[in-house]
Image (cartoon, rainbow, N blue to C red; front, top):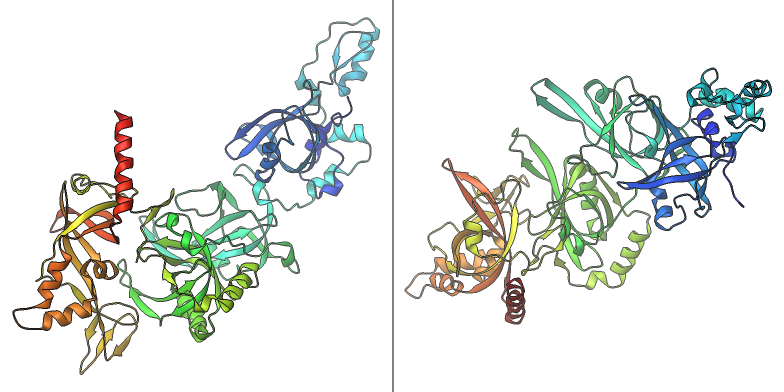
Length: 625
């Protein structure tokens, strides 16, 4: 056999549970036994031929298994690891954070049990001397049980006796080792991590049955790029809120871990951390370069569709096209007003999207962008929620990060494109005429196609969250006496009221304007072969149905005479077939539950595509018979 395991490798690991660095490690070669996949990680049993130890490969090493470099019964050299205990099970296991393949699979598992020459007794190194004396006196048939092997001496002592003056295990045990985030689990006791703060939320207050309190969280990233969320409540939140600063590096210890609630987590980590007022947080000086900066995973604007109304957050980079003034939005929960500012960005896909900034981001970063908006700066924004307002929109969260003109390759590439051709290119909104989407990909007007009766006959649709469908239907009725529009601010499109004296007051922009515009809030009835339903449409969709703007229709309505163009325009809009993308949610009106069907996108019927779709449906029906 050309390659073999390191004798007593498992004892070496047990004697040195927290190696200070890979340079202090002896050569540790073990055999991989019982390799199997568990979730996204791979587990195996590390064997040195005498002893075995349960092991887990770090997630980043999964590719070594997939590629075939690490295989069952093969040999690997462990370069770095962490030894953990599970107190409830009285077991140990190691997390291998760095290793390399030494040998392909062997024919069988290596077993190095030793036999005494005088007798056929199975011996372990520790037992050999005392058993030999009995063997020489004719003693035979001695059976030594594994429990007796370490009855009087620890693994560290055995390792010392067999390996001379190798690195003192006592000193190693006392050395404070920085643990990688991937090695942490709820069963560990003392650990220390070195991390950079890559996200910091604002302080929030809460009220529940146990009383009132405050809470905030931070996103922490270690040298390997692994992230974890740390949350602090009440006294701990007050103690550490000012201490944690964005971009700085800290040593953290005396925290606890628990299984992450994936419903509220956006980071790729199975655990989340809680810090108490007894936790230790120490800033690491002159070590910032060892921790990676904030990492972006940019999504092109034209590919935001699959993320609409999903829990996944996205990062975007774009050229600023416009910046709105600060608006004040009143929260329904507590009637508080919070500042908001909308910015419109574009990228190389020639699509634009509106990003809403809130609170401090709206006031600080938003104002900075407004001051340099004429220079079309590039912005990179991390952790945005994708909503369905105006088709597709983005909204910043308390932990979102906005970087203006970042020094990254994506920003330089985008700037080069915009200066050379982008500024002269016609841009279209990502939500304009675009159907909504689901996680499986962008939905066209021919996806999720249903009849109106499918929606109206299922009153429970949308109880948990809005559901989306595509329909082909006719606009069968538009009541002429309804309130079809509202007076809106030309800047933010919010409702305005007539100001005292003259002009119009916008609560959102907190200013008076001499003029305003009209925006549709249209109710109409749709009909198809299965039934009919009342639907709501807002400005962009209503303009496509009516064929003109609300201002133009208002002028027609104000005209007198028998040949009223207003009535004629509504008549022209009825009994016209369209393709609609609609959302369905329940609502309560006068203590009665009913469906609210909202048009999210409108498109004319492409009869060639429609015919192809119908032929496909007929083929599916034949196959199912």
